[in-house]
Length: 171
Image (cartoon, rainbow, N blue to C red; front, side, top):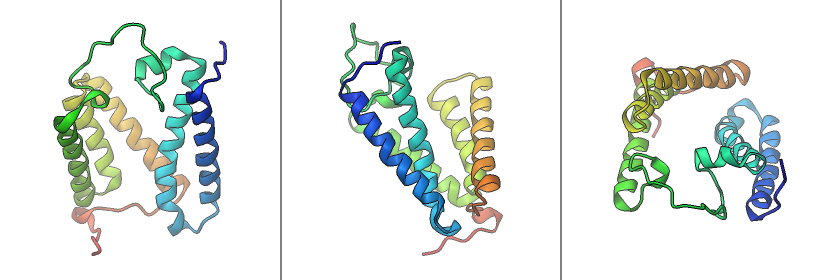
C-alpha cells in the first residue's frame, strides 16, 4: 500500500478538512439549525472518505468510478454502460437525472423523508441500476434504517412527515 501524492489526494485532504470542520461546527448548533447542514454534510463526508480510501486502495475507485479531478488515467478505454448514471452525457443524461430528482422531491412531499428514501433507493436500484431484488431491497432497507437511526433517533431531528401523514408544505 503505497501512498501516492497527487492532485486528487491533495484536493481530497483539503475537502475532508473543510467538510469535517463544518460537520463538527454544525454539531454545536441548535437542533432546528443543524438539520440541513448535517443532512448535507453527512453523505458528503462519507463520499470524501471513500475517495480518500481510494488513494490507498486504487481498485476501490476503479470499481466505483469515483474521482474528484479525473487525473486517474485508465490503461484501456472502459466499456461505457448506458445505464450508469455517472457516465450519461448530454441532454438525455440531464433529463434522466432531473426526472429522478424531481420524482424524489415529489415523493418526499407526499410521504415524507423517512418513507421516501427507501422507496426512491429501491426504485433507483431496481429500475435504473437493474440490480437484483436482494441487492435493491437490502440497500433500500439498510439506508432507510441508517437514516432513521442517525437523523431521527441519534440526532433527534424532526423529519418532514409528508402531506399524506400530516405534514405541511409552507410557501
